[in-house]
Image (cartoon, rainbow, N blue to C red):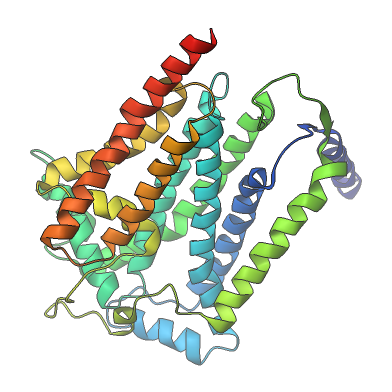
Length: 370
């Protein structure tokens, strides 16, 4: 009886997917949402497998990761799929976000859909950061020390919050245990938010490159499953190439040195997907204002549906995206007078686009069009 009910539910689901009306002119950039969901599922599966061999203890964590990579049969596959899968996950989400910003896909009535996506991105950043700490190498330890210390800038309760995060007076064993617990839990929260994000999408339907509601609709199953499958094959190929041929290309060599609280690395570099935000944080000398700037960056992203309407101006938008790439490059370099000045300039240009250029262009365009 239960099997019959499950079969009926699956049949109804497939009928819904097949008949789901979708604009007929979607480009491949619209595939990034489904690919992001697939990569999240991959991260959850590989993460569970990694947790079976990981020891959240400061004296064992580093060596448990090495043991998994070297001694466990096919352990290196699990680890490198998880480690490089995080990078591919961020690539897919960033492309998804850039497409949404360019076409302003979060405009009325899809504001909730867009804002939930920005919240997912912010939670992804937090999840990835605490995951980067778990291997307990030099870069993991000192990255955790530097970033968690920023919380002390919160007025009145900042120091207490830092001690709560650490579980003591420095980054130590309680810190690692807490980060491991959160890193195991948060992907499931991400999965729940992603389902809510998908439900919001189905409430209003997909946008399209022309940003008009009268575009012809076609059944999703007949036209877009094969198109999505091509994206899956490309991502799968990228994952295989990274995991088997260039497994450490996106990792820092210092993270293969066990964490040493008495030896600070010459230059602390986070993972590449943190670098633009890290550059914004580093370009502002005051710790508290730097944290506010990072929060303001995410707020600026979340407010775009309310600040601007219609498709972005291509040249201004290209300058904005290019500025983020430059910030990412600057975040990987040592602090000098030149990199500090350049970081400040591109930070200001990023905020100028989000809060001035994009809304002003939208206002002028709508006035001329009207």
